[in-house]
Length: 199
Image (tube, rainbow, N blue to C red; front, side, top):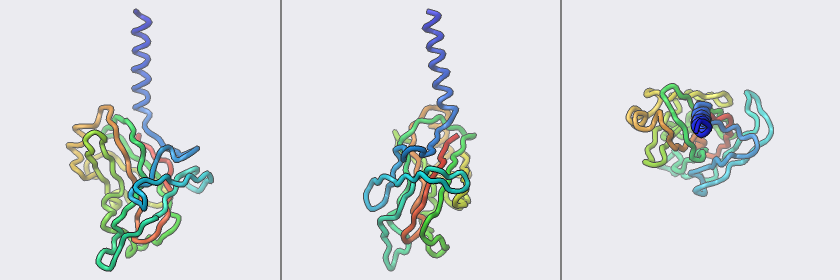
């Protein structure tokens, strides 16, 4: 009886450790089930690169724009692609942080070429069961391409009724999906993603 109780406590301890150590994607061997969504095809597999860059970017995934949907009246690309994670389970709190590094490889990031209409959805986090999403705008994150971006899970950084979202889903094991904007411009662009974590 004592052995069974001890074993159960040990399993609970391991589960707690699994949650508290956070979620990490370093893309060491492959794309780790991440996808490109919103491009020419509904789902695409990102390219996995094995060489290293500066700022700790080493073994990462790359996405390319394969569908540009603009016209004379609509300068912003209507088909927007994202790096999208597999579903994962996490116990988030208001002390949690999202971290990632986005690397720009090609395409003009001049102000006049940016997809300004879509930069208010730079990052989105969606709860699976109710498909309730919160989003964070690029200007709030203050992205510096090639350097790590840090997004705290606090109210002023997120839209989509963050307070109610956090009350309902935080501090419990919840299944989420994360998307990070890759389609920054009205034309072709190539971006890389590395070192994604929720801690």
